[in-house]
Structures are given as structure tokens and as C-alpha cells.
Image (tube, rainbow, N blue to C red):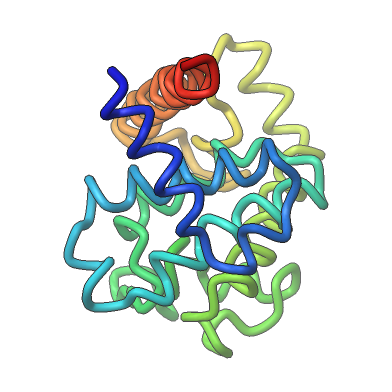
Length: 196
């Protein structure tokens, strides 16, 4: 257990300046996100170290600024691109771009998603705008009333007019459960390290 706690503290010390600029809770959250990225997409740490280093800090800062749960934003980056800042998809009409696969249909809310889509800060700002939009939508309230556990994450994929993609909801729900449990375990290990 001491080895895990030591690794947690070392990973927090190795945070980029951008991540160290956030509050202590944020530094821990960024450290946790970076550890998950290393496990889920280890090649990203080598092939795009900037993205792997900066995306977690951007997620935390933008989520906090707009009062959105950073864990939901993090799960979307995992689901949509495995945290790849340079991801592009031609499946959607008009394409989808960046770690959150921002679609061109959201251009009125986010601006042109093709512009600097690979920039972690800009991508996080865009996705948080989309999530804030859906938080205020009638559809979000409807999904809450119907008992959806993660209605905001489900809406991200289906939007306001389409039927809910239950497979997508299940997948993001499972990832959200993993992130919630992992974050609790991560915080516990940091507390153990401080008490030793």
C-alpha cells in the first residue's frame, strides 16, 4: 500500500505547471486523471505527451468554471476518443473532432469545432458548453424523471431529438462507475500516504 501511495505522491509532484496552478483538490483530481489515461491509453503518453499532460488539467479547470462535474467530462473523453486530442471521425455528418468528438452541429454553441480541435483547453471549454446546454434542456429533466442514472452523458450522444442510445448510456454509465470508485480509492491512498 505504501508503494501505491508513494506513486500517487510522485505523480502529483510531476504535474505540469498548468495542473499545479489549480487548488489542492484539483491537483489530486488531475493526478488521478493522468493515472487513468496512462492505464487506458499508454501510447498517448508517448505519442502525444502534451495531450496526456494537459487534458486532465483543462478538464478540471473548465468543469469547475462552469459548475459541471469533472468526472463526467473525463468519462466523455474516455468514451469518445480514449483521450486522444487528435481524434477525428468521419462517421458523423460533417465530422467530429478532438478528445470529445465535438460535432459541427454544435457550432452555434461551441464555435467551429475544426478550429484547433486538438487543443485540450479549447476542447474542454467546448464540451462543457455543450453539457451546460443539455443541463438546461427539457430532455435532461425528462431523462431524470425516467430514472436515468447519467442523463447528461446519455444526452451528449443522442441529443434532444433522437431516441436514447441505450448501449452508449450503458457504456458511459459503466465508465462513470469505474471513475467514481477509482477516484474514491485514489483519495484514500493519498490520505494513507499523508498519514505514514
